[in-house]
Amino acid sequence: MRSAPECRDAVAAAVTTLESAVSRLRQAYGDTLGVRRLTSDVARLATDLEELGEPEPGRRGRIDGPLESIPDTPYDPSMWAGAEDEGLGAPDRHAP
Image 1 (tube, helix red, strand yellow):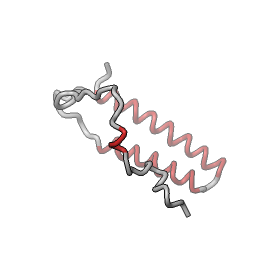
Image 2: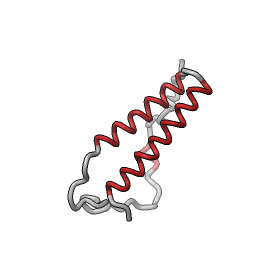
Image 3: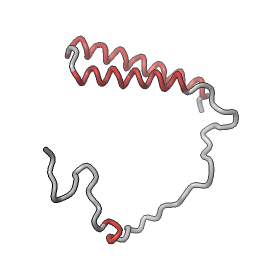
């Protein structure tokens, strides 16, 4: 198992590779909205990685508290009565 600094270095190398790939996309596609969003996303990844800092001592992938078991049995259908489908909106409305 890799240490936290080794993992962080591996992710940093991957982000650098991704930055290079997005740069090549910019050359091929120009300054499009999609390329600008990708550039922003990759920059945010790099910033988030820098902000991680050092892991807390003794935190090696430990989850705090007990794991919660979720049964495989189906949920009661009445639980969903009147709920909207996420992303689809209410049945009596439509997107503009």
